Amino acid sequence: MSKRQREDDLLWLQVLQKKELMRAKKRRRRLLQRILVVVLILSVLSAGIFFTVQKAAKQKSSEPNAGTAAADAGTPSGSTADIPSDTQADGQDLPSDTSSDTASDVQQEPDAEQAGDGADGLAELKQVNGYSYQEKTRTLGNGISSTYAVLLDAENQTVLAGKDETERIVPASMTKVLTLLTAVEHLGDTPNLKDKFKITVEITDFCYLNECSVAGFEIGEKVTVLDMLYGLILPSGADAALGLAQYVAGSEEAFVKLMNEKLDELGLSETAHFTNCIGIYDKDHYCTLFDLAVIMQAALENDLCREVLSARTYTTSKTKQHKEGMVLSNWFLRRIEDKDTGGEVLCAKTGYVSEAGSCAVSYGVDEKDRKYICVTADAQGSWKCIYDHVKLYKRFSNRRKADDE
Image (cartoon, rainbow, N blue to C red; front, side, top):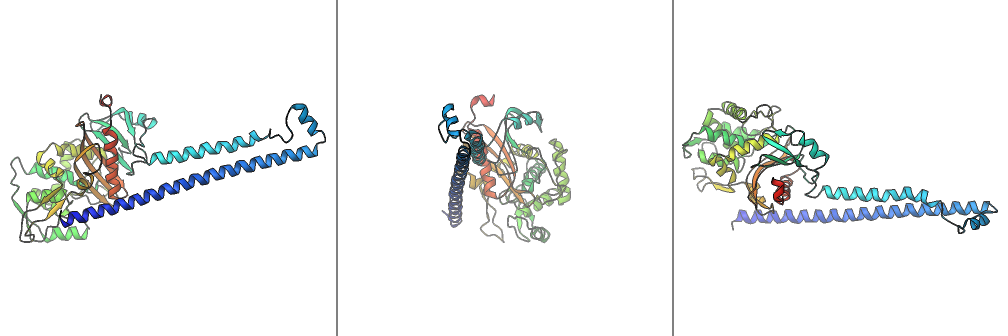
């Protein structure tokens, strides 16, 4: 095991320990809240009974014939016949509080989807970008932390579950899936993947000034086309994206034009428009979760794109600047590979800008070899994004055969 792997494992254990401590603290807080609610309700009930008894006693002492009347009516002296009207109001608080607390707990579980009115509303949409809604399409709840999410059956082209999935989003570095697809398609049927491109100071300066993630190529380094393809996806390198754009089209502007032509070819031009090949925020750089699913599906159908998107690690060619090459990693795939998803996540691309939160598009299969595409956006942290994908894959990998029909 390498030093880097040991460091990754140690970091992962620390994250797990912190998460478990937070869960334990949350459970204790909920238990305390429930105890306080019960104590409060009992106090209210006791107070109501006390004041009712006191009231009945005062009425008895102020009425000379009260004892006789009570005896004639067959009601014991000091009866609490007035209590029902008071305790009914107090008693209604208990079910209400208990129900609210339970609902809160359920919403935080992975199966917080509902197929009621929300699903019926989705069914009215019928079809989006070739994906059809079904009566059993689920509306996701707060168990999925991402603001936007969709899980699609990639084979049957159906929507399994969604959460604000038709809204326009900021795609961040998920943009690079289209960058990859556009570059590969314009390299031709027999691309020379060993051909080299020289990294310029303009590229490195742009990445630095815009605080972009990079593969780590240096000024003057002669990088192969294949290295740039992997550098684009695994570490989400803006240096690789700009290098590919200039290599393929001569400039980023010309390359972005090709990207938007591809969107038009895929039938996405009405809902998606890109202004750069990196994923830098721009008000005119947008798409929907469905658009990203279609782009991912198209990339998966290209052998070279699929190979790059499925790689967990890759070592670049040896150069003067990197004599042993650089080891690149797809951290989403490496972090999710040991999670119980009910199958395996095979391809993925993440993204992050402050306007988009943590987001990701992934492709996976379950143990029955059913294929899925999952897209989420606006999670408050990369781990929450990963666990949203874990929850969705796991939840729907348990589908019965009848659900596929």
